[in-house]
Image 1: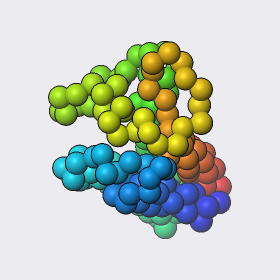
Image 2 (image 1 turned 90 degrees about the vertical axis):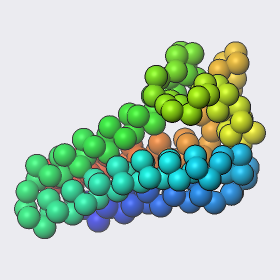
Image 3 (image 1 turned 135 degrees about the vertical axis):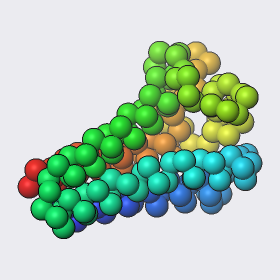
Image 4 (image 1 turned 180 degrees about the vertical axis):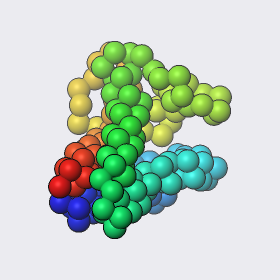
Length: 155
């Protein structure tokens, strides 16, 4: 279970890096993001997303399950952040306050510029931004990583 959890965590980080930095249109729309936006997103999110792998590995090496549970909790928090950012506006029309912190644009504007023309499989709900396939895959990886991390910590 430990190997699976570590693999899923690192797969989510790798997937995030690839889809943030490499143009895979229509899966993503990196060409619409500025280099500064890409660098900021990677600098903030990649270390946070990688930390559960470090904690889980350290917990396994030191035979300290508590570190594994901290890793699982952090992975779950990352998942929750992504779900709130993408699914709350889609399902309720409410945008989290930190969605575009420091950018000077609204989530709807940022979504329209960078994500609206990417692969999206969900039906429209009014004019609300929809989670695209790129982020649905990421959220599934994150959730699977969180669940297996908790299982690995308990094993």
